[in-house]
Image 1: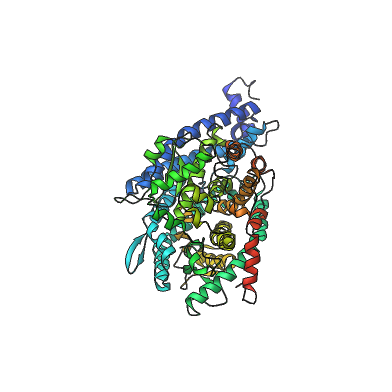
Image 2: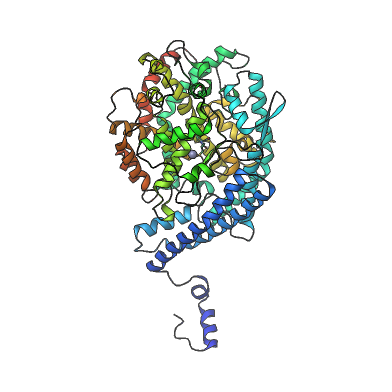
Length: 606
Ligand code: X8Z
Ligand code: ZN
């Protein structure tokens, strides 16, 4: 429109006459420009992400003030770039005639930032500094046991093994006091900045942003999670009733009452998120004696952490996946280094977005870490399967899928499978009369986790929306822990505390609903795989180890990455487009019947 203006004076007059059109918004973009923008954005993100991952890796495996500073600066730069790209992407989104791919990629550019910062100078680095500091404080955190300092991975294992309620309380309180409480002010500041960033991108708050990554509206997603919880809640209630009774039998009324909530430190896990470690406490006489414990089997066969990872790799190889690259073994952190601080919380990486796969763990020879290895490798095999996709599609169908793959595979760690890999003697395979015990052991991890998996983000959604004000960050956490899990802290907590920060994902700003979804999805994948494998028999005894057809079908889903809405990916592997708790309910159906019998006449609920 300025094409016919010939003199400078006329140009100035024209600009003054059309300030909005001439100075603020550029001419309406074209479809070709949108395509070109997306291509350039993908190129830039791919390039920058590699250095960012290398810096983050060094920081997480060697925490010092210097690596913190490097990580904070690099994270800040990356966020700045992401927010800039998201803002520009938003301009193209309403264009008519966009291809489905460009449209999807623009949405991913706008909604794909977990921790967005406001655009004002310095804000991105400020936010990045806060989360780097909280993540590293978590990594360096210590509790105490018998008055002596104890690091994060050791205290986690000790919570699984210790049965003395006074010692459990000491570990629980010291960990939450030392790790959570000091983060409180940083967390308030970080929440405010993240919200500002999300609002700048057009979201109601950062909670709405987090809920937006599921190919549906944020409110619909919240409703979906509630629907899924409704399907499995009766199972949790039955387990809670039974476990509380057993804890009361073991510890007596003074430690665990017959009614009301369960004391959080008695459940074999620092966060009471998975209870399998106290299976011995709740196992029914007879049917509950499985005759083996995976941790004991690993120790008896002299497994070390590397051998445990090799066993995990072996499962994926049996499905037809290529072996892990040499660099995986060279670059992974499989055991805790003795000479420096690291973040022990397990994670899986693909540093070059192609095949620089690594895991970072502080592996202990126990059942928890054997399962966690399969979990982390699930991430790595997923990452490698989608490495041919364009950058913005190099991700899980949704984040719940990414978390579900390894767990789904680990559901195949049945007694028969343990015989196949020579961990268990054939003669020791529990007979059919132990099915209830096997299911109860599994439920203690899988079912117990469900309300925790849901409430961690209910909490953060409420913090982001202001429903929980900054002055009630502790009370808000305790309330949701009670409401969903039916648990209480072993001592009263006040508003000088911040117990949520004593959980890794809160300190590090990692969304958590993904694990709730994964808990549901892994049973859908498993039921589908067992059907593909033509398994006859009780679902929980099925192992698809060695089944190349299942492997090929799985690979087809993994290869899709995030290129299509998640229902397409779900359909590719399971034939259904709906996330549903039905498969999990079916898996545990015999246990539910048994629990209901055991619970007859016992107080239920809290
Ligand atoms: O954080 C994890 C993985 C890393 S993605 C070890 N998980 C959640 C947790 O530990 O809280 C796996 C299960 C839930
Ligand atoms: Zn994971």
